[in-house]
Length: 461
Image (cartoon, rainbow, N blue to C red):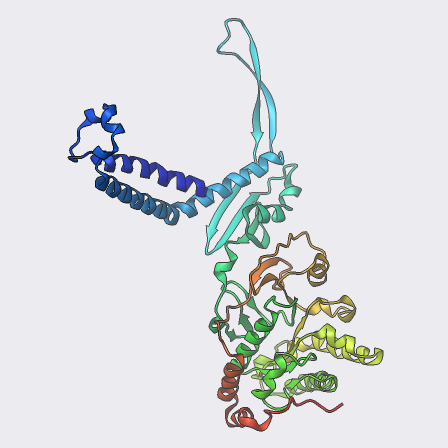
């Protein structure tokens, strides 16, 4: 397709160059007979090089402008045609059609001779549409013998169109595949990450609706952008007025937030982490009881209905922490985690759990299934993707882009994902400290100015 645009530009360049080069010769007059005079053509000193250079420059400029205009004006149209051709070719190569032999008399034979030709009697009805950054491919469910295969074309279309499958929906008489087109264009800046009405915006088309799809699981190795992603969410949650508690057993980047966060909200030692988990469970159960006694409480409504803020427990390097514990402590930690993920949604207690690889033995007893939003960043093995997303036919590819990965937003459809962009030199400590000061008022200002600047709020072991 790009070659076609370049050839079109070349086709414009050549005639323009020929016309502009009419003034090759010394006097600059149009003397056509000189084109046929070998002596003149072979004598370079007779050529007018100034006119030749001018003609070449003009031709190149017009050719480049033509190519640029063709690219920006017609490229999307060419791409739509290209996609339709690929879909039609898929139908043909997979033999999703029916033929029958038809015998006709030959029009070009002097004898009575009959010719048998194959005639297509059935070809699938399919419709292609681009709208609001999405591609919709609808294939008719017409009870043909190919119908079952039509319902299983998501991965083939995804890889062939180089788009990301977002949703498969059965409509009346059709199966509709919805693809995200050019996912990277939907990446947003850290300033555009907003938390409103129980939802956090993470891309132009992606929101974590934690009120209805609670708990987030993040996986990714070093250099994948996991830490910046977590810090971005912490900043946005604090700006929304949420209660955020941070657990960093490796005493790494998140632990540094102790210098700007309120007391006893950042923990890195195992005793402090266990205390936070236990306290969170107790507070959650107590809040559930108190909510029922509050004026205006309605059965089936959640914490936000009665005006309570959400509580987020951000737990980095969870697997590394579990491996530090003895058997009894592991069981206790797992019990705390299980209660939080099973009972936290209505009371407004949410987990953001991060690990390099989500080992199943530390997310047993159905814990992993309760994480509605899952993100895998950077390079991961097939085993790692299996731990994150379970059995899937998704083809995972690696691109060397920081903050790029895959996500299941709670729809059981795995899509390409890009974390919000963080400007170079962005200082999370300063920004989060400023946020804490603005949201928490005078008491938070006192904390940020030095009350807990030298400690993490951990319980001594």
